Image 1 (cartoon, helix red, strand yellow):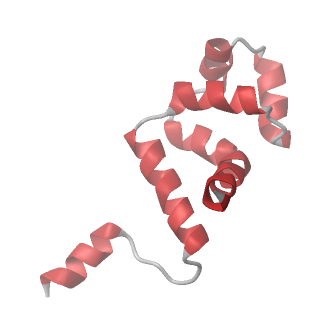
Image 2 (tube, one colour):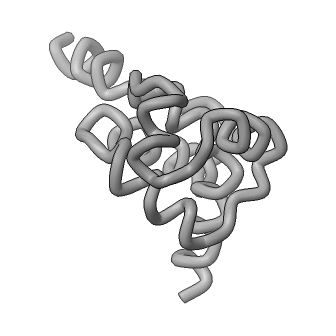
Length: 95
C-alpha cells in the first residue's frame, strides 16, 4: 500500500514534466479539463493540483510515451543511483 502512495506523490510532483512529455499544449489540456488557460498555467507553475484535477489531466495526456516515462521515474525512485536505459541494456546483451 505504501508503494501506491509513493507513486501518487511522485506523479503529483512530476505532473508538469509529464504534461511537457505528452506533447499537448497547455491551452488544449486546459480546455479539455474545463479550466481557463491562465489559471492552468498558474497551477502548473505552482504544482498545486487537486486530486480531481490530476485525474482529469492524466485522462487527457496518458499515452504510451508518457506512461513509459513515468515508469522510468518510478524505477529510478525505487532504485536510486546509476541506471541504464533498455536500449543500453540491449546493446550490452548483444555482446
